Length: 132
Image (cartoon, rainbow, N blue to C red; front, side):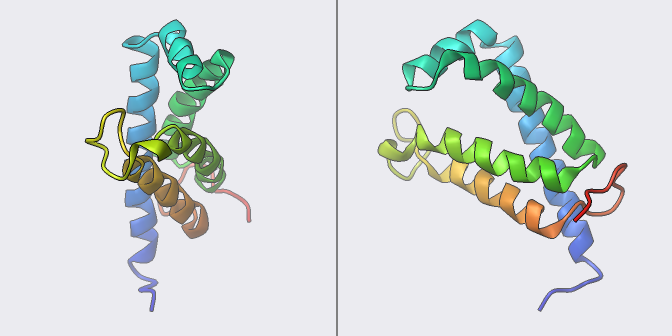
């Protein structure tokens, strides 16, 4: 049974957690690894290098939008696709993220967390609510 009094706050907590995670990952790709370095990594794992640029943009802009609660349900739905794509890099590495090159449990967890937020909705304190 869903507690309708607290479920919206669960969506808020999930939205903030995903927003912080996306913002941190996007800024790391931009400022630490650099866009060119991220593009090189993408190519090394079989993705076209040019995809690094929209991924960096999505992670930074999408993370900020999640934090602000701007169309959070739709941002989370797009994030499911992006996170699942990122997860595929780790499928051959096994379960544990401590495995060489990282396992798949963390990116799949994030994929499912984004899916949960897309299903739950924006949560309270959203600046611009998603339409259904």
